[in-house]
Length: 114
Ligand SMILES: [Zn+2]
Picture (cartoon, rainbow, N blue to C red):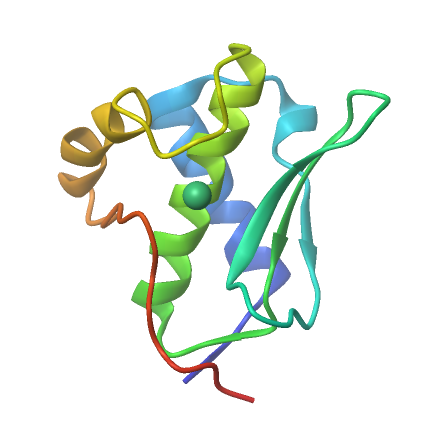
């Protein structure tokens, strides 16, 4: 089990952004919260702010970074005014990100851990 660490999240997000997205810094803000029935979500607020909210725990570090990479694709979609769905454009990132060990799936099914 992996307990979400803010420094890890920040480092991974910066790495992913440098390698792939080149988003402005304010798209990379991370929050860690105990979430109910999702592993994470990407948020665009009414006033145009952006947050990626991550759960407090994951089954493993690899699982955590896959989920983070997935949510950052949604931030990329927000930045480019694309639909925030798991469409064809979303999955154009699957291959390039897999080269760096990020597995992009539509969902990450697994029982929640405490
Ligand atoms: Zn998604």
